[in-house]
Length: 380
Image (tube, rainbow, N blue to C red; front, side, top):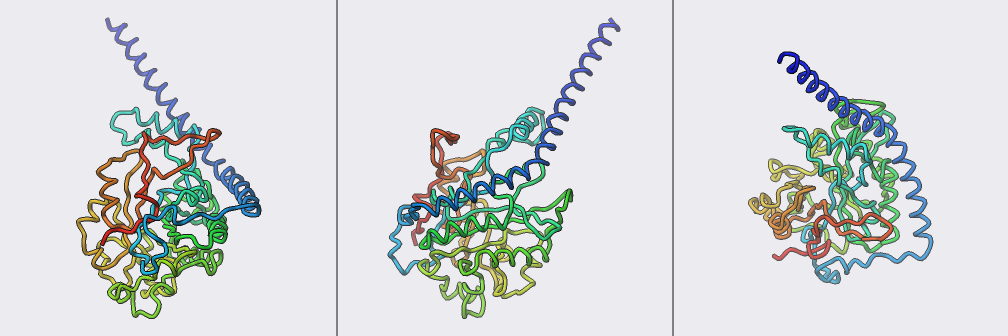
């Protein structure tokens, strides 16, 4: 009997060790793949930019903005804060490679491990394709490097990116904007990523990085950039501007690009550079605790139901960012909340896409966030 138990115990131990070895092999494969992913990202981005320049130099037709708006763009009385724009989350992420997808799905099989294997299916079209489909707000996660450059990526194991180099990503946005001079304003949400392991030349994102990022944005975007200083104009503060219903007219914002700093560890330091926010390139996005600050302009609340429970945002005429879904989950109720809450930036993980025979077909169980067009004017 003891011999049988010993054999069974050895068999169980062998099985456990084999499974652990397979998981370690998967993790190692994903890690090694990630190390080479950055180089592939950069090469793909260069090829992509070459193709885009060729596209624009031929017979390119600018986007018809009225097609994606549910209100007449000829109405010159509409202000920027009266419009809801459809946005994407992690706008830079293409399809993940098989090592990372396999690792996520394998980890999700382990009891009590908080990993959802379905996350492996998340992907977005390229930035230009999203703009062509009517998306007018993008989210870019940014990491800082010791050489003063910035990359657009998520984290080490999941570092896929269609726009690896931040400066080149801005060049792509500028290229589209220049060839669509009457486009509705683009709002780019910048989220600095925390570095838990400073591998290679990565560094923690601090106030100096934020200032350097401002410099890159100004240098690349030039006159296309709509700055906080230009927005607040002659008003004493953003609070005074909002109280006077003084957000710029939508017509005056067409063909322009705004950058918003996602709430992060350097938000306060960034604000302290100039508390009027007149000299910064990005609008600092705040949480509810900051809605009464003189410099408040953008607020982040990813729960659309919560947005409806804070009517003071509407009274204060703040620009609000919320999320209609959270991949891989979605619901008609949350979508309806996002559609009616009055938020100006409504982010989705299920944007409108093309279905091309030669490329991957996006189904998402038939669910696609549209908000009656990417630009809709909430009812007063």
